[in-house]
Length: 454
Image (cartoon, rainbow, N blue to C red; front, side, top):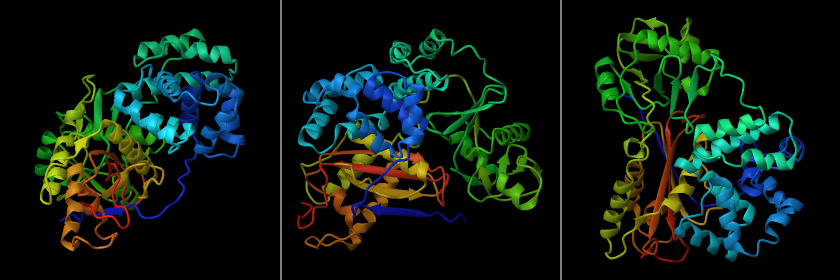
């Protein structure tokens, strides 16, 4: 029987969260703040010479003459929000988002620089695609050693969510002429949930969601909805061998690692994982004589379709988690149901991605929302996490002082909370690698010391 671990964490202490800058994130700051590609000299300075974390760089951008010329002292908050959204996504904010950010900025609850980072990190769907296209174009510009600001603005004009717009922008400056080499066989999706091979036309699951014997693995894959896709199956021995060989050739990508298990199921037997090869010799993907439960990594034909949120086992239970919260609240009172907020959810998803990349559990001390966190070595839905938090009810008596032992539960039943939003991500490193982290956030926040939940 596989042992499954779950860890919950509750917001308790105040600490400062600092993010190490990368080329991607600094390039996105240039796009969001200046509506242009990063110039080569500036990108290198902020990334390698400034000594600042990402939050510090974002803040320092507001000391620049270019920012002053664009936004002045940021006294017109409405115009500023519209500008940042158009710089990033070529659209204005939705009405709820516009109203929320206006209140946060005008009250001083969030600085303009941190607002920009929050909007960047919350990009989803077409917004995320547009931003990634702009980032690719911007980095190509900087990597070529180009620094003319007028050119930096020109190359970014017209970039949208289409691949053609990115190609056209790169071709303006002769940056898109090199053909893709065959060495980049497997390409990861934006959220890292799947890897796709252009040479075999197959898409591979990138997470430990199953540990089964052969018969159970066949059913597991056929029933799987993951990464926004369905119609999964077990790979053949030859397909698995190709996957392992080429992934190794690409530099030991973390995606090929599945916890500490040494065997993987294929349609015609079992193969050695990278961990197994390390322990017992041979190579990852080698066929082995084995029986019993092993890793399950499913595969599907890449038909060119876009991922569907409704089919994703990590993002399809919005309605379920809202209903579960309201069921729990209605045990105590009526007339105060919560509803789903895309604005709240976008911040939860952005932070889930941060936690997954770092492989740690720590609260976001800068969020204006209440926050419940959960992490597990298995596939954990929003509703699963809620049910774990609900177990704290057994230890709670109305009128008790706030306690970390029941704080997840009291946040769920906090009557003044009207909106929730959740996000989840596959953990990329650490002891919970390939497990799932869930972040649920609550607006308005609860768990005020000295105040009863209802």
